[in-house]
Length: 319
Image (tube, rainbow, N blue to C red):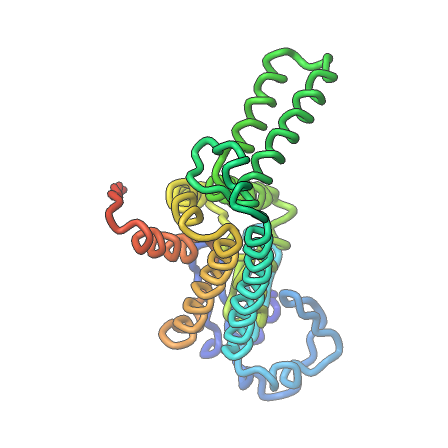
């Protein structure tokens, strides 16, 4: 890398230090002769190959040195059409799947009550004001699962009593929670697992490749994976609190099939907006990978204010 940097004329050297990334811009006119270089530059290996022919198809190539010592190189031409199509595909597929499952559930509810007497033959569910096939079936399933878990814990005699009590308490908590609360717990668990992977030094390169979105990487799926990714503890904590407070009421205001589609589409759309804005307004040499669930959470907050316009929300302005 140092040898490659020394070969560049001073007019074509553009190192930029920003956070943990150093950017080196290689212009295609940096070499007037087909110089041959043996060695590695980022992920690309130039061995017995003219450098100018490698760079001829790219106006510029960006090389990033990651904190773990590895490097990443991206072409300086960002594509916009492919991310747009990917985002449209995420929304189309997710909402189509949600619609199919919701129609099936409504059909099951429609054929559940065969006579008016069936409505009065079922016991009123605690906390529910309406009888549906889903509510009765869910209540029966909850009781069956709880009985199975209690029987299973009774056989775990090797565990201390307080551990068994905590396990049963957790099962009851999960089974009695609303769909929105369960959804928030699953999102928090997903964020926690990905945040834990960021703490593994050996996983840094994998995480940068697949869980951050860079406009010049040529990848579109990272628009979606990056919205579950948090590297810093502060970023992770604040977004986790946002999930904990805003996801349950928002998800409960929608159907249980619609909210996952809404959240995935919102996350991909937020990443796409950042992608397009970067291409329009940000200098190429200052572009850094993006990650975080903030865009999806802003969408949840907007839906929260729509469904619950009279709710009171308090903000803490940190210094």
